[in-house]
Length: 385
Ligand code: NAD
Ligand code: MG
Image (cartoon, rainbow, N blue to C red; front, side):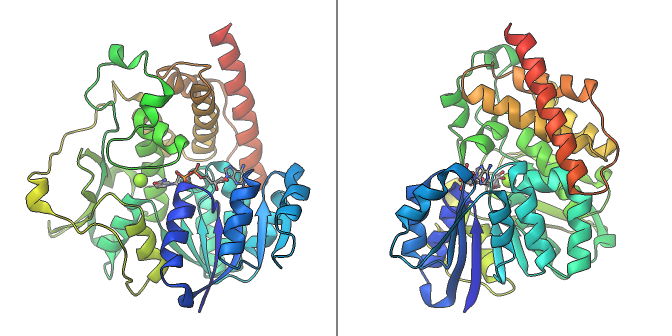
């Protein structure tokens, strides 16, 4: 029996993970499940899966969670400290699927505890990549990428040496506005932006896919997970999302990982690793797909790509600042407070105005994150005034 914990259990990735676990209940024991504010959703999952503990991020909802778990035997806890304790509660496999930099402390705690950590929470790696990779090295934790592209690269690298890699080719769907001009992007609504053509995902990452900031964050993520040098990581637009990424070796042999656009496939690969497990996912039907298309990314129409590459090159606190400003801007866009094109503009403005020293620990990262958030709010106030 594998002891598993799921951080962000009520979200898109968390629910997909539980869907796989539920199909083979004898193989897994659930230690901890967490959510931000959905007490009823979390309590129902904790009961269904017989979790040892349930943690709600929002401290004010502790009493509500305790009441909802009455008589279940599940331990209720709340707050960021409890999320960190849950990460140290003895799971041997954890899914890091909290969205945003809010996942950083629990993800770090899980890595320091030294088990296997399946990482969906890309923002934590973007903000604190060097520190996280250090933690992996020191604790002996196994970090398995769940982001479909990084999981694809991980699979294409199996058994090979990074020094033999000529190029990593990170594929991108291009999002719902791939063919639109800047002018046509101006009036995009939140509802249009979250409707991704291939993938069903949480709201934040769906907007990131639409601005292509998601691919920018993934570039930074890839540079930490697979340190071949930024100049060897290329982005290639592939609208069908069937090839999830590729690795070209120095002998010019290129390996690709293919599959239906269903997150349960990369999640299953991390859940069963190094073995394989059955999934209910659609097998690939290439005859039906008919063709696979490719095109170069356009940094003029999607400036988030340029901003992300610049911050990746700059390193230090720059990616944490990029990420924090983007989180604030995306949340404001989803609330209808700013326009679609304002998102990248705000991120760029914050990057121009604010820099921070190279972080030497998580507290430094979170300080840069907090400063960048307040700067982003300030920039937004001027924009909407
Ligand atoms: P989601 O919004 O559907 O779910 C987020 C989860 O995190 C929820 O359980 C929520 O309760 C929890 N959460 C949110 N804010 C929190 C906070 N402040 N403290 C504690 N918990 C909090 O998001 P998602 O689409 O499942 O994405 C999760 C992560 O996985 C993101 O980092 C995303 O970039 C990454 N990812 C998602 C997909 C996908 O298909 N959805 C694919 C690749 C990577
Ligand atoms: Mg991805």
